[in-house]
Length: 373
Image (cartoon, rainbow, N blue to C red):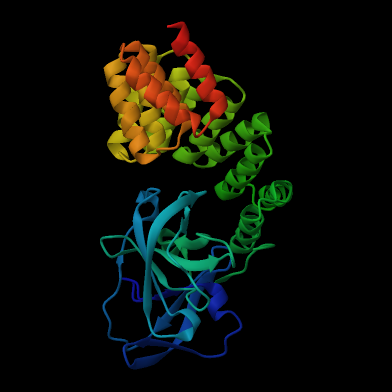
Protein backbone atom coordinates (compact mmCIF):
# COMPACT_ATOMS: atom_id res chain seq x y z
CA UNK A 1 0.00 0.00 0.00
CA UNK A 2 1.63 3.26 -1.15
CA UNK A 3 1.68 5.80 1.68
CA UNK A 4 1.97 9.61 1.42
CA UNK A 5 5.57 9.27 2.66
CA UNK A 6 6.43 7.35 -0.52
CA UNK A 7 7.00 4.15 1.46
CA UNK A 8 5.05 0.93 0.83
CA UNK A 9 3.24 -0.41 3.89
CA UNK A 10 2.63 -4.13 4.38
CA UNK A 11 2.82 -6.83 7.07
CA UNK A 12 6.20 -7.99 8.30
CA UNK A 13 5.09 -11.60 8.06
CA UNK A 14 4.52 -11.06 4.32
CA UNK A 15 8.13 -10.04 3.64
CA UNK A 16 9.88 -12.01 6.38
CA UNK A 17 12.57 -14.35 5.02
CA UNK A 18 12.14 -12.93 1.52
CA UNK A 19 15.26 -12.59 -0.64
CA UNK A 20 13.99 -10.12 -3.25
CA UNK A 21 10.93 -7.90 -3.39
CA UNK A 22 8.86 -6.24 -6.10
CA UNK A 23 6.14 -3.64 -5.83
CA UNK A 24 3.59 -3.26 -8.60
CA UNK A 25 1.15 -0.57 -9.76
CA UNK A 26 -0.97 -1.71 -12.67
CA UNK A 27 1.41 -3.53 -15.03
CA UNK A 28 4.49 -1.73 -13.71
CA UNK A 29 6.73 -3.59 -11.25
CA UNK A 30 9.75 -2.10 -9.52
CA UNK A 31 12.36 -3.66 -7.20
CA UNK A 32 11.96 -2.75 -3.53
CA UNK A 33 13.95 -3.05 -0.30
CA UNK A 34 12.84 -3.17 3.32
CA UNK A 35 13.36 0.26 4.88
CA UNK A 36 12.10 -0.49 8.40
CA UNK A 37 9.61 -2.48 10.39
CA UNK A 38 8.26 -3.55 13.76
CA UNK A 39 7.62 -7.28 13.99
CA UNK A 40 5.55 -6.84 17.14
CA UNK A 41 3.15 -4.50 15.34
CA UNK A 42 3.53 -6.64 12.19
CA UNK A 43 4.03 -3.56 9.98
CA UNK A 44 6.98 -3.16 7.62
CA UNK A 45 7.77 -0.33 5.23
CA UNK A 46 9.43 -0.88 1.88
CA UNK A 47 11.38 1.61 -0.20
CA UNK A 48 10.95 1.70 -3.99
CA UNK A 49 12.27 4.09 -6.64
CA UNK A 50 10.51 5.23 -9.78
CA UNK A 51 7.03 3.90 -8.97
CA UNK A 52 4.33 6.16 -10.37
CA UNK A 53 1.10 5.75 -8.42
CA UNK A 54 -1.33 7.74 -6.31
CA UNK A 55 -0.75 7.25 -2.56
CA UNK A 56 -3.57 6.29 -0.22
CA UNK A 57 -5.21 9.01 1.84
CA UNK A 58 -4.71 8.28 5.52
CA UNK A 59 -7.58 8.01 7.98
CA UNK A 60 -7.47 7.05 11.67
CA UNK A 61 -8.38 3.79 13.32
CA UNK A 62 -8.89 5.86 16.48
CA UNK A 63 -11.93 7.53 14.91
CA UNK A 64 -13.72 4.33 13.89
CA UNK A 65 -16.86 3.18 15.68
CA UNK A 66 -18.35 -0.28 15.95
CA UNK A 67 -20.90 -0.75 13.17
CA UNK A 68 -19.22 1.58 10.67
CA UNK A 69 -18.78 0.23 7.12
CA UNK A 70 -15.25 -0.65 5.96
CA UNK A 71 -13.73 -2.19 2.84
CA UNK A 72 -10.81 -4.62 2.59
CA UNK A 73 -8.67 -4.49 -0.54
CA UNK A 74 -6.20 -7.28 -1.28
CA UNK A 75 -5.24 -10.16 -3.53
CA UNK A 76 -6.72 -13.31 -1.92
CA UNK A 77 -5.27 -16.63 -3.04
CA UNK A 78 -2.94 -14.74 -5.38
CA UNK A 79 -5.80 -13.54 -7.57
CA UNK A 80 -6.28 -10.09 -9.06
CA UNK A 81 -6.96 -7.15 -6.78
CA UNK A 82 -10.35 -7.59 -5.09
CA UNK A 83 -12.52 -5.81 -2.55
CA UNK A 84 -14.81 -7.07 0.21
CA UNK A 85 -17.12 -5.02 2.37
CA UNK A 86 -18.25 -5.33 5.96
CA UNK A 87 -18.46 -3.38 9.19
CA UNK A 88 -16.25 -2.72 12.17
CA UNK A 89 -17.37 -5.46 14.55
CA UNK A 90 -14.99 -4.66 17.43
CA UNK A 91 -12.12 -2.37 18.35
CA UNK A 92 -9.58 -4.16 20.49
CA UNK A 93 -7.13 -2.47 22.81
CA UNK A 94 -5.43 0.76 21.81
CA UNK A 95 -5.02 3.56 21.32
CA UNK A 96 -4.99 3.07 18.42
CA UNK A 97 -7.07 -0.13 18.41
CA UNK A 98 -6.65 -3.30 16.41
CA UNK A 99 -9.69 -3.44 14.11
CA UNK A 100 -11.95 -6.49 13.97
CA UNK A 101 -14.16 -6.49 10.89
CA UNK A 102 -16.71 -8.61 9.05
CA UNK A 103 -15.03 -7.66 5.73
CA UNK A 104 -13.57 -10.93 4.45
CA UNK A 105 -9.79 -11.29 4.63
CA UNK A 106 -8.65 -14.45 2.86
CA UNK A 107 -5.26 -16.10 2.54
CA UNK A 108 -3.08 -13.88 0.38
CA UNK A 109 -4.78 -10.64 1.47
CA UNK A 110 -2.30 -9.93 4.30
CA UNK A 111 -0.68 -6.54 3.93
CA UNK A 112 -3.61 -5.12 2.00
CA UNK A 113 -5.60 -2.09 3.02
CA UNK A 114 -8.72 -1.55 5.09
CA UNK A 115 -10.57 1.60 4.03
CA UNK A 116 -13.42 3.65 5.48
CA UNK A 117 -16.38 5.02 3.53
CA UNK A 118 -14.38 8.11 2.54
CA UNK A 119 -11.72 5.96 0.89
CA UNK A 120 -9.18 6.63 3.64
CA UNK A 121 -6.75 3.94 4.71
CA UNK A 122 -7.45 3.01 8.34
CA UNK A 123 -5.59 -0.28 8.68
CA UNK A 124 -3.46 -3.05 7.18
CA UNK A 125 -5.35 -6.34 6.81
CA UNK A 126 -3.34 -8.79 8.85
CA UNK A 127 -4.99 -11.99 9.97
CA UNK A 128 -8.13 -14.05 10.04
CA UNK A 129 -9.21 -17.03 12.13
CA UNK A 130 -9.92 -19.95 9.85
CA UNK A 131 -13.47 -21.19 10.28
CA UNK A 132 -14.35 -18.22 12.50
CA UNK A 133 -17.16 -16.00 11.27
CA UNK A 134 -16.33 -12.29 11.34
CA UNK A 135 -12.89 -12.94 12.83
CA UNK A 136 -10.88 -10.76 10.46
CA UNK A 137 -8.37 -8.20 11.69
CA UNK A 138 -6.40 -5.15 10.60
CA UNK A 139 -3.54 -3.36 12.34
CA UNK A 140 -4.20 0.39 12.76
CA UNK A 141 -2.69 2.68 10.13
CA UNK A 142 -1.36 4.99 12.87
CA UNK A 143 1.31 2.40 13.67
CA UNK A 144 2.97 2.99 10.28
CA UNK A 145 3.99 6.49 11.44
CA UNK A 146 5.88 4.92 14.37
CA UNK A 147 8.10 2.72 12.20
CA UNK A 148 11.76 3.70 12.14
CA UNK A 149 14.58 2.60 9.86
CA UNK A 150 15.74 -0.94 10.51
CA UNK A 151 13.84 -3.95 11.81
CA UNK A 152 12.62 -4.00 15.39
CA UNK A 153 12.49 -7.68 16.27
CA UNK A 154 9.57 -8.79 18.44
CA UNK A 155 10.50 -9.56 22.02
CA UNK A 156 8.93 -12.94 22.65
CA UNK A 157 5.76 -13.65 20.72
CA UNK A 158 4.38 -10.90 18.51
CA UNK A 159 1.14 -9.09 19.31
CA UNK A 160 -0.41 -10.66 16.21
CA UNK A 161 0.50 -14.18 17.34
CA UNK A 162 -0.83 -13.58 20.85
CA UNK A 163 -4.07 -12.07 19.59
CA UNK A 164 -4.58 -14.77 16.96
CA UNK A 165 -4.42 -17.53 19.58
CA UNK A 166 -6.75 -15.66 21.95
CA UNK A 167 -9.31 -15.14 19.19
CA UNK A 168 -9.14 -18.78 18.15
CA UNK A 169 -9.98 -19.76 21.74
CA UNK A 170 -12.80 -17.20 21.77
CA UNK A 171 -14.25 -18.60 18.53
CA UNK A 172 -14.50 -22.08 20.11
CA UNK A 173 -15.87 -20.62 23.39
CA UNK A 174 -12.98 -22.11 25.36
CA UNK A 175 -13.23 -19.48 28.07
CA UNK A 176 -10.89 -21.14 30.57
CA UNK A 177 -8.27 -21.60 27.86
CA UNK A 178 -8.75 -18.01 26.75
CA UNK A 179 -8.32 -16.78 30.33
CA UNK A 180 -5.06 -18.73 30.74
CA UNK A 181 -3.71 -17.52 27.40
CA UNK A 182 -4.65 -13.88 28.04
CA UNK A 183 -3.00 -14.04 31.46
CA UNK A 184 0.21 -15.04 29.67
CA UNK A 185 -0.35 -12.18 27.22
CA UNK A 186 -0.68 -9.60 30.04
CA UNK A 187 2.52 -10.91 31.63
CA UNK A 188 4.47 -10.78 28.35
CA UNK A 189 3.10 -7.37 27.30
CA UNK A 190 1.71 -5.62 30.41
CA UNK A 191 1.15 -2.33 28.56
CA UNK A 192 -1.04 -3.94 25.89
CA UNK A 193 -4.61 -2.73 26.31
CA UNK A 194 -5.82 -5.53 24.02
CA UNK A 195 -4.33 -8.14 26.39
CA UNK A 196 -6.23 -6.78 29.41
CA UNK A 197 -9.48 -6.46 27.43
CA UNK A 198 -9.05 -10.06 26.30
CA UNK A 199 -8.57 -11.24 29.89
CA UNK A 200 -11.54 -9.24 31.15
CA UNK A 201 -13.75 -10.69 28.42
CA UNK A 202 -12.75 -14.23 29.44
CA UNK A 203 -13.47 -13.49 33.12
CA UNK A 204 -16.93 -12.14 32.23
CA UNK A 205 -17.68 -15.30 30.24
CA UNK A 206 -16.56 -17.41 33.21
CA UNK A 207 -18.92 -15.35 35.42
CA UNK A 208 -16.00 -14.14 37.51
CA UNK A 209 -17.32 -10.62 37.47
CA UNK A 210 -15.27 -9.08 40.29
CA UNK A 211 -12.02 -10.11 38.58
CA UNK A 212 -13.39 -8.85 35.26
CA UNK A 213 -14.03 -5.39 36.70
CA UNK A 214 -10.48 -5.15 38.06
CA UNK A 215 -8.99 -6.26 34.75
CA UNK A 216 -11.06 -3.85 32.65
CA UNK A 217 -9.98 -1.02 34.96
CA UNK A 218 -6.39 -1.94 34.11
CA UNK A 219 -7.30 -1.72 30.40
CA UNK A 220 -8.72 1.74 31.10
CA UNK A 221 -5.50 2.79 32.82
CA UNK A 222 -3.75 2.12 29.51
CA UNK A 223 -6.51 3.60 27.34
CA UNK A 224 -8.95 5.82 29.28
CA UNK A 225 -10.97 6.38 26.09
CA UNK A 226 -11.87 2.72 25.55
CA UNK A 227 -15.66 2.90 25.81
CA UNK A 228 -16.10 -0.88 25.46
CA UNK A 229 -14.18 -1.45 28.72
CA UNK A 230 -16.63 0.77 30.59
CA UNK A 231 -19.51 -1.11 28.96
CA UNK A 232 -18.01 -4.44 30.03
CA UNK A 233 -17.60 -3.15 33.58
CA UNK A 234 -21.25 -2.06 33.54
CA UNK A 235 -22.37 -5.52 32.42
CA UNK A 236 -20.27 -7.15 35.14
CA UNK A 237 -21.81 -4.88 37.79
CA UNK A 238 -25.29 -5.72 36.44
CA UNK A 239 -24.54 -9.43 36.75
CA UNK A 240 -23.46 -8.84 40.36
CA UNK A 241 -26.75 -7.05 41.04
CA UNK A 242 -24.96 -3.74 41.62
CA UNK A 243 -27.27 -1.69 39.41
CA UNK A 244 -26.26 1.77 40.60
CA UNK A 245 -22.60 1.02 39.83
CA UNK A 246 -23.68 -0.37 36.46
CA UNK A 247 -25.50 2.88 35.66
CA UNK A 248 -22.37 4.88 36.45
CA UNK A 249 -20.23 2.70 34.19
CA UNK A 250 -22.75 2.86 31.31
CA UNK A 251 -22.77 6.65 31.65
CA UNK A 252 -18.96 6.79 31.46
CA UNK A 253 -19.05 4.65 28.32
CA UNK A 254 -21.54 7.05 26.74
CA UNK A 255 -19.37 10.07 27.58
CA UNK A 256 -16.78 8.52 25.24
CA UNK A 257 -19.08 7.05 22.59
CA UNK A 258 -22.64 8.37 22.70
CA UNK A 259 -23.84 6.67 19.51
CA UNK A 260 -23.78 3.05 20.72
CA UNK A 261 -27.41 1.92 20.84
CA UNK A 262 -26.64 -1.17 22.93
CA UNK A 263 -25.09 0.91 25.69
CA UNK A 264 -28.21 3.09 25.83
CA UNK A 265 -30.26 -0.12 25.91
CA UNK A 266 -28.21 -1.52 28.80
CA UNK A 267 -28.56 1.78 30.66
CA UNK A 268 -32.33 1.67 30.12
CA UNK A 269 -32.52 -1.83 31.62
CA UNK A 270 -30.47 -0.73 34.63
CA UNK A 271 -32.74 2.28 35.15
CA UNK A 272 -35.82 0.04 35.01
CA UNK A 273 -34.22 -2.32 37.55
CA UNK A 274 -33.67 0.60 39.94
CA UNK A 275 -37.24 1.89 39.41
CA UNK A 276 -36.02 5.00 37.59
CA UNK A 277 -38.57 4.46 34.85
CA UNK A 278 -38.64 8.02 33.51
CA UNK A 279 -34.87 7.85 33.04
CA UNK A 280 -35.30 4.42 31.45
CA UNK A 281 -37.71 5.90 28.90
CA UNK A 282 -35.14 8.53 27.92
CA UNK A 283 -32.40 5.89 27.57
CA UNK A 284 -34.55 3.55 25.45
CA UNK A 285 -35.58 6.50 23.27
CA UNK A 286 -31.91 7.25 22.63
CA UNK A 287 -31.28 3.59 21.75
CA UNK A 288 -34.16 3.67 19.28
CA UNK A 289 -33.04 6.95 17.77
CA UNK A 290 -29.81 5.20 16.83
CA UNK A 291 -31.34 1.82 15.95
CA UNK A 292 -35.13 1.95 15.38
CA UNK A 293 -35.20 -1.77 14.52
CA UNK A 294 -34.09 -2.99 17.96
CA UNK A 295 -37.07 -4.94 19.26
CA UNK A 296 -35.76 -5.25 22.83
CA UNK A 297 -35.48 -1.46 23.17
CA UNK A 298 -39.12 -1.07 22.09
CA UNK A 299 -40.07 -3.76 24.60
CA UNK A 300 -38.09 -2.12 27.43
CA UNK A 301 -39.69 1.22 26.57
CA UNK A 302 -43.15 -0.34 26.67
CA UNK A 303 -42.39 -1.97 30.00
CA UNK A 304 -41.35 1.38 31.52
CA UNK A 305 -44.48 3.09 30.19
CA UNK A 306 -46.70 0.29 31.57
CA UNK A 307 -45.22 0.57 35.06
CA UNK A 308 -45.92 4.31 35.01
CA UNK A 309 -49.52 3.63 33.95
CA UNK A 310 -49.03 5.22 30.53
CA UNK A 311 -50.85 2.36 28.85
CA UNK A 312 -51.47 3.97 25.45
CA UNK A 313 -47.75 4.71 25.08
CA UNK A 314 -46.92 1.22 26.34
CA UNK A 315 -49.25 -0.44 23.81
CA UNK A 316 -47.74 1.54 20.95
CA UNK A 317 -44.15 0.68 21.94
CA UNK A 318 -44.90 -3.00 22.60
CA UNK A 319 -46.65 -3.39 19.25
CA UNK A 320 -43.60 -1.84 17.58
CA UNK A 321 -41.47 -4.50 19.26
CA UNK A 322 -43.78 -7.29 18.12
CA UNK A 323 -43.66 -6.11 14.53
CA UNK A 324 -39.95 -6.90 14.69
CA UNK A 325 -40.04 -9.96 17.01
CA UNK A 326 -43.62 -11.34 16.88
CA UNK A 327 -42.82 -14.41 19.02
CA UNK A 328 -41.44 -12.63 22.08
CA UNK A 329 -43.40 -13.97 25.05
CA UNK A 330 -42.30 -11.27 27.55
CA UNK A 331 -43.47 -8.51 25.22
CA UNK A 332 -46.79 -10.27 24.57
CA UNK A 333 -47.35 -10.71 28.29
CA UNK A 334 -46.69 -7.02 28.99
CA UNK A 335 -48.90 -6.03 26.08
CA UNK A 336 -51.82 -8.14 27.35
CA UNK A 337 -51.58 -6.52 30.79
CA UNK A 338 -51.25 -3.06 29.23
CA UNK A 339 -54.45 -3.63 27.27
CA UNK A 340 -56.10 -4.68 30.52
CA UNK A 341 -54.79 -1.54 32.22
CA UNK A 342 -56.34 0.56 29.46
CA UNK A 343 -59.64 -1.31 30.03
CA UNK A 344 -59.55 -2.97 26.60
CA UNK A 345 -60.33 -6.48 27.84
CA UNK A 346 -61.08 -8.02 24.38
CA UNK A 347 -57.62 -6.99 23.12
CA UNK A 348 -56.05 -8.24 26.36
CA UNK A 349 -57.71 -11.67 25.95
CA UNK A 350 -56.76 -11.86 22.28
CA UNK A 351 -53.11 -11.09 23.10
CA UNK A 352 -53.10 -13.65 25.91
CA UNK A 353 -54.43 -16.20 23.45
CA UNK A 354 -51.53 -15.41 21.10
CA UNK A 355 -49.19 -15.89 24.03
CA UNK A 356 -50.68 -19.33 24.76
CA UNK A 357 -49.29 -20.67 21.47
CA UNK A 358 -45.78 -19.52 22.41
CA UNK A 359 -45.51 -19.88 26.19
CA UNK A 360 -48.48 -21.71 27.78
CA UNK A 361 -47.16 -21.29 31.33
CA UNK A 362 -46.78 -17.51 31.00
CA UNK A 363 -50.14 -17.32 29.25
CA UNK A 364 -51.83 -19.08 32.18
CA UNK A 365 -50.38 -16.51 34.58
CA UNK A 366 -51.72 -13.69 32.39
CA UNK A 367 -55.19 -15.27 32.14
CA UNK A 368 -55.33 -15.61 35.94
CA UNK A 369 -54.52 -11.90 36.33
CA UNK A 370 -57.14 -10.95 33.76
CA UNK A 371 -59.78 -13.08 35.48
CA UNK A 372 -59.09 -11.36 38.80
CA UNK A 373 -59.59 -8.00 37.09
